[in-house]
Length: 215
Image (cartoon, rainbow, N blue to C red; front, side, top):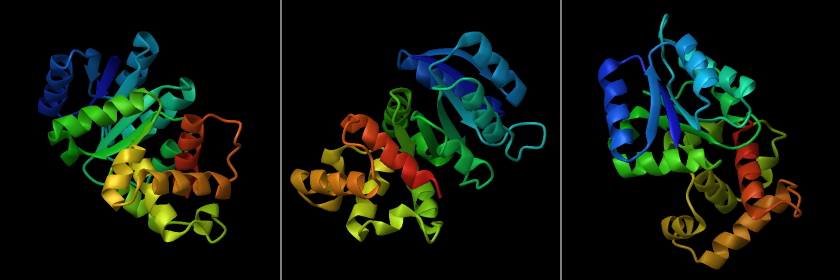
C-alpha cells in the first residue's frame, strides 16, 4: 500500500510515517501543505492519502478542501481524514463523493494503533471507516424527505455501524443479535434505499453507507 501523508504537526507527521513504515506500508511522502499534498498525489499516485483537516496557511479546513479536490482530480483515490473534532465545512461533500474509500477519524483514535490500521486498510480496500462521533452527528442532521427516515430504529443502528466499517459479525456482537438478524436488517436497508439487487453485496453495502452520508 502506497500512502501520502499531509500533516502540519512535525511530530505527528513523523510519528505516523514511522508507525506505518513499521507495519510494512510504503509512505512515499509526508508533507505539511495542501498544495504539496495535491502535487504529491499527482506525482506518486498513492493508494491512500491520510490528511489532517487543518493545514496552513489558516489552519481551518485547508486539508479537508484539498482532500475534496484530490478526489475530484483522482476518482477512486482513497482518503482517510484526521481531525481534532468533527468539521462541518466540506465534510459532507467529501463523505458523499462517488465511490467508497473514505474515512473520517478523530485524531484521538490514532493512538489505538490496531483500530487505526484496521480503518486504513478498510478505506484502502474501498470501504468506509467513520469515527462514531462523526456518525452520531450525521444521524441528527437529516432532511424531512430523507429515505433514511423510512428505516426502523434498529436498521438505523445497523447502518450506522456499517458506516463505521464494522463487519456483520461485529455488528451482531455489538447489538447482541444473531448473524441472521443482521443479514435480515441489511437486506431491509437495501430494499428501503432502493439499491439494485443486481449489484454485488459489497457494492450495495458501500452504496447504502453513502446514502446514509448524504444528509
